[in-house]
Amino acid sequence: MQTLIIVIGGCDRRMQLSVVAARLSALRAGSRLSMKSAAQAAGLNTSTIFRIEHGLVAPREATVRILLELYGEGEHAPRLLSLLREERVPGWYDAPGVPLGHSAFLELEDRAQIVYTYCPQQVPPLLQTPAYALAVALATLPVGAPYEERATYEGAARAAGLVAARQRVLDRHGGPRLWAILDRTALLDPPLCRAEDRRDQIDALVMAAKQEHVAVQIARPAAECGYLYQGPPFTLLRFRERDRADVLVLHLLHAPVVIEDRRRVEEHQQAFARLSLSALPVDATPDVLDGVRVGP
Image (cartoon, rainbow, N blue to C red; front, side, top):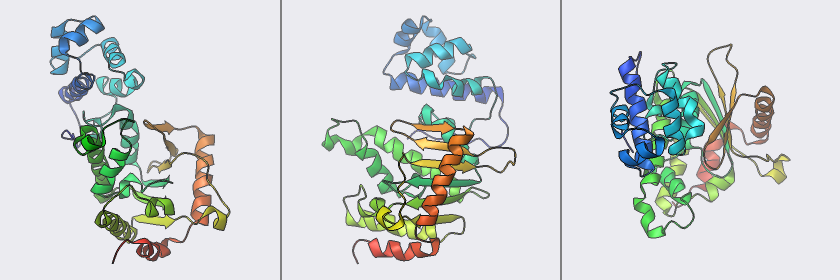
């Protein structure tokens, strides 16, 4: 994964342009276009692409939109334009190696006071071991990707690196509190082949559950608790600012979707509350995890 950009404090115009430049350069490379090909397709001069990608000139907003459309990222233009307009300070989530479609969610997660998350089929990313994160990335490769090539598949390695970068927020002083609810499916059927990797993930969850700023609950079976959540994995983010409303994030197939609609946020707040009330208590989590731990 490419080096992540971490910005502390303020940021000058040159930094803003360098972040935009690095992003556009990476997107072009990811589209397998040369500067000349991109320039021709966008109706620009090759020298213009060069100057933009090297931060020598501030691109026009219209040019950024054209290039993002060309690279298949047109829907995320507002995100990059907000940097160009100096409307926000860039952070690690603006690095070229971070998918542009994930950047907005990652910034919100990074700034949250409390993170509530429910991930039915897998361990939530903030609690995954490196081996688990890589296994998840490999298991979600495009259909037809040769199995023997998966271990060297760069996209999977970048995805696992992104998970590790996200987890640093929990170790940061003043970082958010995490409340995660796990299904037994995620514990009994992990995407890990080696028994030692399975044990390591269980041990990591046990350690996390013992931290004061982390709460982990294990859901009871639907037949036992009488509640079945029907929907995609989701995260609720609560912020320190009193006038800032909670945000809902749905983790869909290709990218997280940030939702601020009050009604939908409240629906998922109620769903999380029901999941929590029907799950096993927090203090029972270490014993439950020990019970499903693989091997001696």
